[in-house]
Image 1 (cartoon, rainbow, N blue to C red):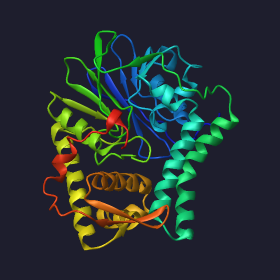
Image 2: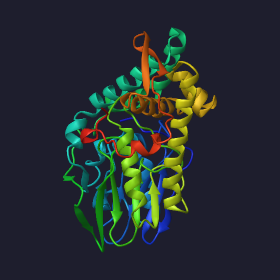
Image 3: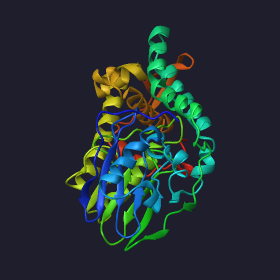
Length: 360
């Protein structure tokens, strides 16, 4: 397997009593925060990107551990930057792996899963862009990170492409790790299989991609769901959270403030989309540029922006407020179709979960 080369080795930082965080680089988004609970039975929350596994091993050695000493690995969800290291970890550790019930079967062969994700991205790009040259440019750009992964696993050994978990979790399960206990809350929305592990009695919650410094991506073209996302946010806001550990970015000083800010941002985006559609038709690409800003188009998170705005539009379509003009399928434009002023739109989302966490 190809391994990434980096100029520096990230370090574990103590972020709580016997809780450590290390930023693991990966080619899709900001560094992934892998967390270590080191109280008797070393436990990782996520394990990062497969080609950066060596950096995790080196980081562990700096604090007197190694992959071979890890006893438990808990996964928040199945996205590549969180879980792809699991495809090779069994060759370096006997750690027990935990994930949401049904997740591993849903993923199956990870290369097949990546191709499903690629097709979902392709659908967004084709919906958003009518000009062929612009569309082709975005398709190439969107596939760059995925091709690095596919090339690395295609060339290497010690890679088991079928994702397997040793223990499949459901909400209410509790596992003991040394002197501590970890519980699990089912928090779909970012995707269908998202779990939020937490330390019982300590108020420490590892929120994966649910709570970040900004709005998380919601891939309605795959298995994300905006209504579920709202419901998960609303549920967390009422919990006694003292520390919130996100998978990307900084740990917020105020967990409740961070959750409210994401909800407020989503509501502002939704109101902005409705206001613009009252003025005329928009395609997805133009709406991203107008609602998020022109930098979204040129930045490295364009697909994330497309996915999030598309999820909001899908919610408005399902509620009958927005219609779709199929200009040249799959390219489409959206228009205002409702007679409501939309004043209750942000609140109504939190009560409309898609069945089984899937996009409707």
